[in-house]
Image (cartoon, rainbow over the protein chains, first blue to last red):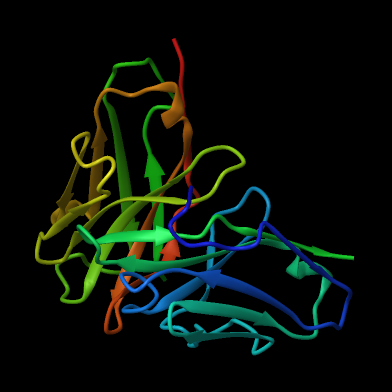
Amino acid sequence: QSVLTQPPSASGTPGQRVTISCSGSSSNIGSNTVNWYQQLPGTAPKLLIYSNNQRPSGVPDRFSGSKSGTSASLAISGLQSEDEADYYCAAWDDSLNVNWVFGGGTKLTVL
Amino acid sequence: QVTLRESGPALVKPTQTLTLTCTFSGFSLSTSGMCVSWIRQPPGKALEWLARIDWDDDKYYSTSLKTRLTISKDTSKNQVVLTMTNMDPVDTATYYCARGIWFGEYYFDYWGQGTLVTVSS
């Protein structure tokens, strides 16, 4: 059972805009920033978004992040076939101890 | 160029202690604002954070696993070591190390390729 809640799956057609949600609580998303990772099959996670909405160099501007209260979202516009992957949100959690918590992951299928 | 590589046994027996080493290059763990974390992923499941060690040797552990984990660093060798005691088949996973960089909070920008550890008798 993951601390952050994501939908298990999402889908879209090429060119579409897709959003993936991530829900948490006051001790994680509500008080800390959110990161998003993309994991292609058989590979290590790759940082897509840090500090809620910042893109590392090299990440296309088709990927964007936002946060409001205890929830966050990742939006992918102009969907491409190579975007088919698992997506994870992550945030620090200050509830009992400093822990970095993840969502359960969302499998994105490009139809 | 920042790189990280995990190494350790591919197979351990139940009750044994696992020792994993993360060897990195392209940054120094003695530099302010740097850290290294270990994260694992059981086959077909989600990511789980395990531990973090900061440039100033502060250490943080997963609440659920802290009694079994120890993290340490050797700055001169650019290595971070994680030990996990009393291994169980449920600990079968790919174990990743990742570099953390401070931007108001730590976030993890570079990850190793991961090493699969299977726990079986």
